[in-house]
Image (cartoon, rainbow, N blue to C red; front, top):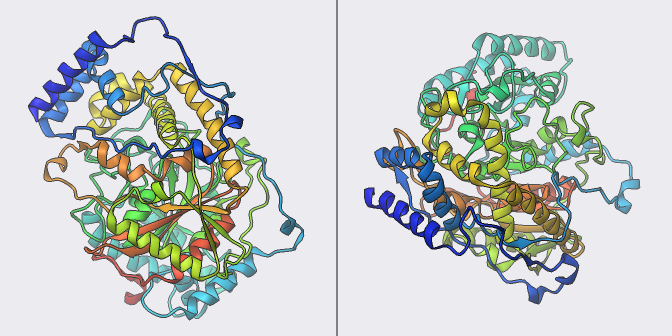
Amino acid sequence: MFLVVVSLFVLGLFYVLLSKQPLSSQPRKQRIRKPVASLRSESDCKYDMKSLRIPRTSGLLFKLFIKLAYTRLGKKVIVPFLMKNSGLHMFDGVALLEAPTYEPLVEYEPSSEENYTFSNEEEVDKLMELDNKRSGDRPLTVADYTQGYQSHKFTPLEVITSTLKYVEKNDPILKSISQLDQHSVMKMASASTQRWQEGKPLSLLDGVPVVIKEELKVAPHITYNGCSFLPTVAEDLEEGTVARRLREAGAILLGVTNMQEMGFGVLGSNPNSLHGTPRNPYDTDRYAGGSSTGSAVAVAAGFCPISIGCDGGGSVRVPASLCGVVGLKPTFGRVSSRGCIPTAHTVSHIGPLCSTVTDTAILYSVIGGADSKCPITLHQPKLTLRNISNTLLNDITIGVYREWFEDASTDVVLACKNAVKSLEALGATVVEIKIPELEEVRVGHMITIMSEICSCMAPDMDEHFNDYNLETLSAAAAGYAATGVQYVTAQKQRTRSIDYLKEIFKKVDCIVTPGTACVAPKIPPDAVECGESDGTTSATLMRHASYANFTGIPGVVVPVGYDKDGLPISLQIMGRWWEEHVILRIAYAAENGVEYRAPVIHCNPMSQT
């Protein structure tokens, strides 16, 4: 491994010395890309997403690598070489003619169905009634809680007391909940119990436990954002809209969840002293995915049926996929970001992670909608759950970009193909599509998210440099090396990609891919103490995720099977801006054909009441 670090240094030195475009030279002649309007033909589109091969580092050599990377020579030698090896210099020497799009807010185009009166409450009732008729094993759901409370089989106080015992027993292993205040939790449970006894619950979520990612301010907890110290950017943060709406619905805010530090990664690794790396309930020797790691683990383990995460590059959908739960990244601007650390504000989306599609729809309907204190939410159409329960899909056209869809492990591709066949059997039409410039989207997204996270880290880099995880510093080294020109060019690429999607969505209602290209990776023994840098595995997990973040479209992952080792596999469904109800409908249909398998670590708090 020492030779790897030395080789990187030497190769980087040669790159600087021999490159035709040294970092300090004048800009070279620009290659002008054709505008989108001239590239409408699918014959112009070739699958170009690269499978990265980035050297993995860990342990003492990882520490040495970080020290070298932040030296003056390292910034000129190691970091530029790694950026080039990761493809992050793709936009150098390229001129895009489009205007930049800094926030992917896309105007809603109403359909003829908008004229019909529709009740979200009635649709939820239909979903819960259908769920009750399903046979076989299934995870705990919101309905299990509310029906038990309504029938006085048990009370919120009894259920939460039992839940806290399970958390105390199992979470030292899983490390899903980073902060839990028992006094405030029991106070909420007591108030909910009284409301149910009086027959005056506030909503379906009254008395239902929920956990929220540590990236959002939730009183009385500290918004560490996965760090071992309070980031400067979080010091004056007030509890925001999502937490407030959950409180108003009567939900029990059980605690805040463990996450990858600063949201800088998708493995779910966080070896710092305050958190520890969460474990996957299906196999505790494996990662649970990130960065909304604890939110997925808590739901999969049965601590709660619903949770909140934040998705900047798959950070809801990746852990949901690896832990076998449903994860929704809504349209950009659908859910208020007030009260959330603005870590990667132009690609980040707050969204639900839940046991089932029904629970996802319920939670989404509570947290979504316009917020007068969050400007990006003010131009959205009315939130609807229209027809989610309708699993006859004759009016749905599904788009599959075959090369992208099949760029995954054999088990993943097989399970996802079977899921698509089941959707066809329900009447859906499946057509092949092409999506241009996927590699450009990957690079544009990486430049955007790394630059934005680094701007949040900047106030603390001097005082807390040694307190950050090595993996965070490794990613930040590349983020700080990105230039303003690269960032603006990435936003021009965002404009192009949104324009492409508008054309594609004239032909299809959704685009399907695997949720992740592989199942949950094993945690190497040498990564336990101080983490690891594994860009190859991270890129594999993100392969199908970042497109939705960059363009702002909604995406949902739903479990559709298991690999030979019993690890969950998910299908991703992405749809038009503001049409979450369409992708949730397709996800609900896909969910119907899957036999649920409980994780190795799983509890039922109601069984002890």
